Length: 326
Ligand code: ATP
Ligand code: LTN
Image 1 (cartoon, rainbow, N blue to C red):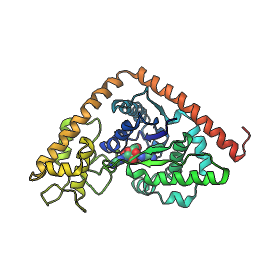
Image 2 (image 1 turned 90 degrees about the horizontal axis):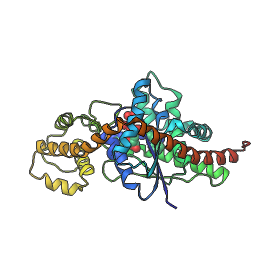
Image 3 (image 1 turned 45 degrees about the vertical axis):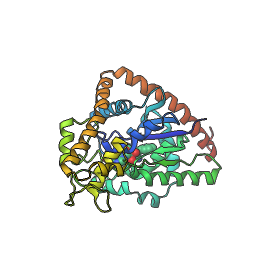
Image 4 (image 1 turned 180 degrees about the vertical axis):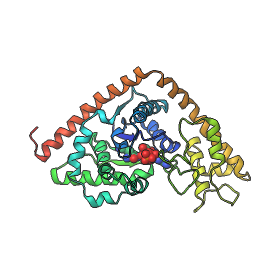
């Protein structure tokens, strides 16, 4: 039997090249080897206030972007998280096996509490438990994510082990899959911060126009050293090199060689061109898919049906173990 993968992305903004290089691109490499389940995690997105109409459009566009990036709906289950009630049901149970102290240590909670100081809601706090439920519900072996999700994944493992320790083996304890390059794409205007779809300034969107992509890379913050080499403390250059390598599948050494003796101008232009070339077919496919909403609907409905079947099974086992009458 194939091992299983689960991952998801929030429809909380335009997908960035960080989401692509850190997550989706790796998913596409794993579909043949694993049984794959990918969700549009809409329930997670409302931990931050969303405009209902925009959220609705983003959910369908995100599904279209999954497919446009090369995920074959014939080979993987794709669905909307809110279409599978077991996510919130398991989440309640696991909330009772997760400590306040554990959740208060989560960096994403601290970051988002700062950015949305007027709306530090309980959902934002318990968000990692919903994420743990997403993963454990499907008994996923592997979770391909960007580096920023490592902490949430460790919490997922802790909660799974805790539950297994009390009730006997119930959940598979999942491993993270973090790519070698692209796992940590930084903001182009502040390379000390992670590129994020909810921070528009220094991000490059998957669906961005080529001219705008070129402009953003040309403006990317670098340093005054004047040569292209991956070195400690050179956040801007290191980030650009990583983006270039994750896009072209070249190694850092190969890239350093390629740009030996060249200035930042040439370097930035080459990266922008590589990114534009990679995104062009994705953008075209996305446009085509968005003109075929019936097809997209059939994908997420079919996906929800399959996901529900698996999820219901796990939920029933969990309910039995904790002592509910099932
Ligand atoms: P938000 O700004 O709403 O928090 P986000 O851009 O951080 O969103 P998520 O939906 O939280 O994106 O993440 C989806 C996937 O993309 C996760 O696997 C995450 O690790 C990965 N990811 C997000 N940002 C980056 C980044 N800058 N570099 C690499 N991977 C990333
Ligand atoms: N928490 C993730 C998104 C996410 C996820 C998941 C990723 C929600 N559920 C399950 C992997 C598996 C984020 O904020 N990037």
